[in-house]
Length: 104
Length: 229
Image 1 (cartoon, helix red, strand yellow):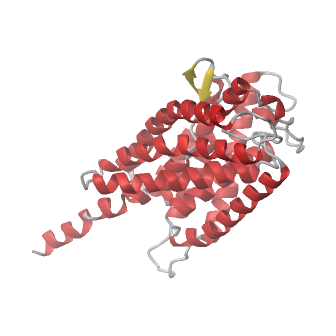
Image 2 (cartoon, helix red, strand yellow):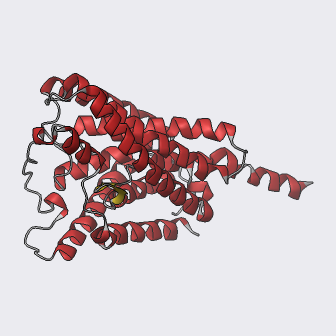
Image 3 (cartoon, helix red, strand yellow):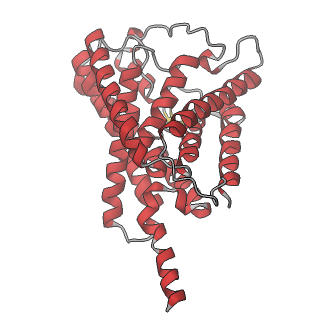
């Protein structure tokens, strides 16, 4: 598989997992939350601060449908991570000496 | 395992913030050696994939769930320094945009999931790889073992931090036992997902898997020798 096709396929899987699959994820509290509840320190958690993001809580502001709002938040998160991470790694990478054959 | 604001007192949050900042600073330098024109886009994809994977909570019984942390997975796929940066970016996006994990707890979360997750995961992966048969097929198994150990280890570090700087007065032993117990079970899920994903990438592009380097690359020089002989 060519690198470009591989990367696109991987991104498609990530978008499907976050945009569609996440709706079917378990909504039970996760390990830490469960332990906090069970041993009695969950109350010490503060409410999350409002950063002004429309995707707080993996929902989308203004979208009432849980499936759609959650899916949009998931897709936005994947793309934000890709742009920030991809940009960072692009800056960090060692540039290879320019060669005529490397057009990728 | 995303820690919200309020679980830890200010000195502990500052201390883990310093640890996280130092770890990320070193990783920013060391990751250069792992990143080139081919692996940099792969690393961006790995970060995005871990974000997606973390949205999939799987049930582990008694009304509790777990999800991929991804430290071991990222470390095996793109190298431990780059892997730690991948998870840090995921945690940053979650804290800033998803209100998942507190802003003042970002240092704690990076310490637990990015640093402990990636480096314990990668360390165990390397140890397992040294013991297992020297072939590409061992890589997903070793990655799964790294993942399996990384999750309860991060949980144990949480409990130790909680003993030092938790705002609630709960017996350390109780928190430690419950955290490690539940995260051993979650670690099994982490191991399965990590092994499957590493296996899938190795099947299509073994050359893009950092942890398979010595093993996947041995084939090419051999072929060259056969041709010239």
